[in-house]
Amino acid sequence: MTAPTRVSPRTDAAPMAFTAGEFIRGALYAWLWFLLLSTLTFVPIAGPMSWIALVYTGPWSVGALILGSPLAYGLGRLLERSPSVLLHAALFTLFGALVGIVTTAFAVFAPWSGLHGSLNPGYTIFIVAVCVSAAIAVPLGWWQTATRALRRDQHNSAGSGAKYPHPSHPHS
Image (tube, rainbow, N blue to C red; front, top):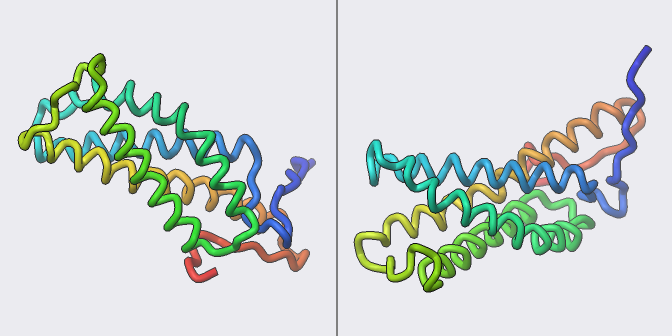
């Protein structure tokens, strides 16, 4: 007995549509990518003490995840009719950079943040690392989720003639 085939939300009119579950998965992947990338970028800067950065980036990134998710969802809905993988990747990269910049600025300038007044030359490299990590993590989360969903669609529609864009083919 074979497992029932999942119905894809993607259609010819909305080739990059997504389910709530796919969105949540993408948001969580982006968050995990951010934690990994930001921690790895701190290693050459802070050495063995780089794990301490998670004390700050962990809670702030959860806040960014919660507050940024509705905006990312809206962006995804705006883009669902566009099959351009390059457009999606570029806009989610810009979105990630914006989230990184806004979250970091808020963390540095909010008097109650524990980081207030951290904007000095010694911390600049950490701030840049966080912002760059966010700019990379968000499109990685999108790409990882989109690839999985579109591969499943290709598998489920084998022989049906349905064709959907695939993140592994950036010109589609």
